[in-house]
Image 1 (cartoon, rainbow, N blue to C red):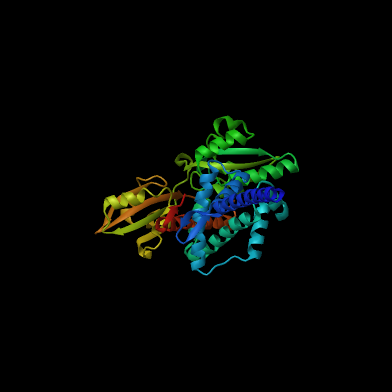
Image 2: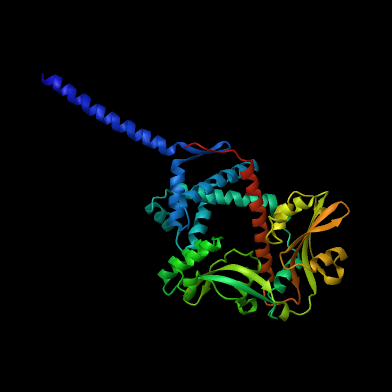
Length: 405
């Protein structure tokens, strides 16, 4: 009798233990099961949860889960592109990348990883995030570095817009973060680095309302027009190479750290000396219809966008030049006369070739107050980013992405 009771008790315990084990195994299997397939790669639920946690810790605004999904899909395609070119990132490369990432927040790699772990982000997830970024950087260098040639005319054009004649003004929004103590500076420098990644004006405005210490916070950080030459040289150099909507790198002020979003930059004709040269771009479409040209023009906000659109076309179909007024071809000069900066015309015809003409800017005297090497580097980075956006858009368009949930 006792043996029978004991055996029944043992069977019950074993059954409960086995049930718990199977439930735990099923849960683990579910967490690591693929939920998204990107070409031949898979993204697991664990990865999505980890990336969502990572973005939350880094202060990403908006829907962190949606952004995490988008990032992981893009990274799969970026890693695939790197693999096709034979690139790989070693453990030492990733260590260096983590140290660079942690350095932006003025913390050691060990402290950074410890903070991540405390917030529920596994070290392997951090390493995967950094590795993808390193590989994508190598892909961009291999594919586009040779195409991003910044001429002396390009530098002159950018510097001319910052001349000391009062010829340009900017419309900015600001986020000012206090940095009165080393501890406060460390926290807010990390925030400023995150805020510098914002590209939406509405998101920047909401972030300013939530975090800025400036009186402009009530208006979403919006400031009135400012003369460009009244700003610090390092800030001017950044603004000159940015399209509207972009945000500067963090700028150190007295007892504060700031980021600025460029809403608009314009020349002020009334205070400009006579125009010496015009910066313009041509995109030539043999046999192109006006409808085709308008569709292409709709994808262009600034002249730098043309580099991405023209990628892959024969060299003679895309021209970007800075020429003295008297050297510009007469047909182009007539079109440019009616355009403002970043405006486009699609109506110029040369035989059967339709020419999209875009005015990039008018330059006058050259300012000597900016570092040419800094301006060149920022122009190069901006054009490289334009190529990167176009290439990633191609990868996404060609990918097979399946949601398995």
